[in-house]
Length: 348
Image (cartoon, rainbow, N blue to C red; front, side, top):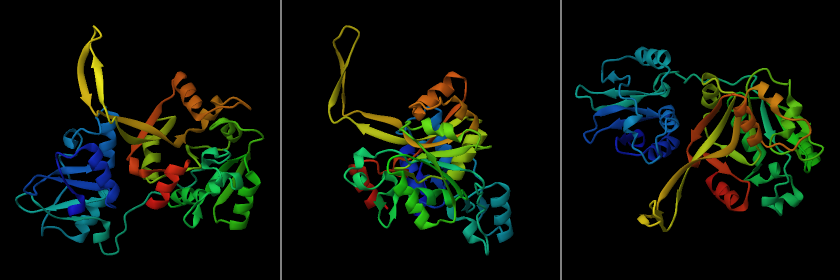
């Protein structure tokens, strides 16, 4: 109970980190007397951020204030199963006659119950695996960056496992630098998922080689860098893209930066207005994981060095809809440079 119970004065950032630590995908908001005030899930936080709320704002304006509940001692397992299924909930709070939380129920509380998991069958994944990985030298003097090990597996296997866990089983790898080594690795591995290669004859940036996949897909597909792992709900990400009617969705990590000095703010006359002591700034950082609609591939020029940021800008200029899917900074693991690689190894 303690892990999923929070107070109303916590910030959005604190709620995101609390959700990241629990498997229940939902938090219970209570007052000091343990009376239930509402619930909050990652979707509630995401909507708040996308409406312009700051990560330092309290959850007051974004938590769900009318949650579905069950009265203690007044329900059956069939009731729990029906409510979870019909309302598509992950969790139901159990309250007493005074509205205080005494328990909560999930699919695991039901005999033989299992949370329905929507699989992303037939959804393809493109892994951009052709870069030189210069920030990871000297490893990448010998190995292609996707084969840099994180514990007992190369990073690319960790990436692929995140997708196979939700049903994806077709992977397209864009290859260039030390591509034959990467191909030999998968030939030896003989995985039970499909591996296809897009050979870059010369470096084409982070999106140029996607042009070769034009006509390959008939539904939205994932694109990911080969040096990141995003610990997020990929099914929710895919549904967010589809329900929002987006042409491109990028996953963005919440990042807080603190300037360790007092910053001087000037007025219109060039005089000191005030000093901000060690100000905090919040940003959404592009992580390198995307969902794309197949038709955006038409915007990529042939045989041209072209980054995915160029693709997004061109898509915007043509009136296409770009979505942003925020995740907590702890959900983003970047192994593209040595300092982050060391942190990633410790976090796995």
